Length: 319
Length: 311
Image (cartoon, rainbow over all chains, first blue to last red; front, top):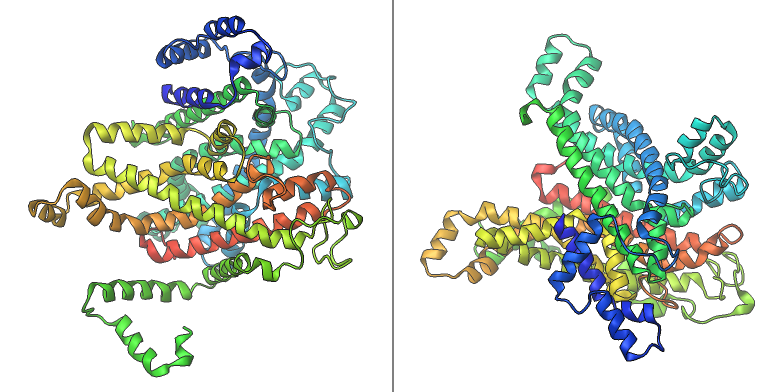
């Protein structure tokens, strides 16, 4: 945790951009420069600076964004729900399809179904997400017109939803506005399907190898000999033991989606944390970049802790 | 193998030399183990398919000046955005009238350059850190592994983004950023291997002969860590390509006018609705190459790592 902050801090320090110069301007006198230099605390030793940095972050103060001229923390609160919404919908469908796919592939090992599942996963591993996103936009939005284009809503719906949770799907449902809800769905469907495909590739492969491990065990044979139906053996015996490691895998893939959102959001002009970080990067808005990095890192760590907790909950041996 | 047709007699003796149960020299044992793995790999059609594509890629990159119909930088504004197949542009031309095929062919060099540099540097860093931590133990182990954990806790792409933005955009810095974010898993693997080897009898024997830590690590531990690292690297190569292309796409990798595939997609993005080929072609190239690496990696894992083989 402290280490994570330290690395971001160091990245911020080795930046070739002089933070003082960007405040006082090129033509400032030597005295003004020195004053600003001291005000920012840059004359103090590195460790002391790091301490100030930590103190600021603990208070939720990431400094001000050069680009939006607002505190970075406010910006982050504004953009985070969009990413959260997208990654959650993506993971949901990834799990919904990926787990059964993996289980079936393991049960029918070596069959054509297994091979198809393998090819699906391989393609998912090999496809650049920003490219397939573009193609998807071209085909489904440009040529077929089935879905909404980039962004979260059509332009005339924007700002019509009150910001309650920040997740438009939920907010519009709360308001009972079905038009906006449908419109939001038509916008989220493609990016979410893409992310779902990526998590499906990973989840189905992992599910398959976990299942194979279980199906080789002797207790499976015992269950079969007892005369249990194939379904009962697969789902109640083998799958029950797969659930535990699967939780970790799902948490990992969820975290990966948050990360993958950087590219996906750029393609779909999705106003989430990924596109926030990239635009900030390209305009050298360092406070915003560091703030965004810290937040994503924090979510990563929280997910890890959360999956550890779930692990203990599901696995009686871990208690 | 190709020797078969040229010199059958020598091949049969070479074959016997390679497949003998009782190797005479250390080199023969090594080569024969390598040959056995190769035979096994050869029976995997997917992996062979991957190897074929990669060999073709190396060949294309190597002979780029011969193969490319045009210079990748020559602009022809009169022929801008020509569709594929028209006016001598097999894969069409981009917004500055440059031949996309030629740019793809030259781009193969950049891709290979990035991948091979990262695939060389990251495992080496990981090997140093992992073996040092595993063999020396104690507080060195604790500190090194804490550092590794910190890097692992970060989302890779975002950390790479932050690094590149700190270092400045460009191919070398992109390579550096990818290396900085991808060494921790190798360190973990190398450490785990070292821990299992560390207390082996032969290590104790060498220690009694008076070998120092440095000699033990470099001469007796490293060789045993390498095979698991190689498998992991091959599996990671597709990821490296995708990350590099992603950085290029965001404008943080290779800078224009260099024909980097990710940057080419980004340049074609503006025209995607009317001129689909500009962004589609480089994406195909990235997809095929990373698919090839994935196929090869899968095959190699099956051959070299009996534990994880997917029967």
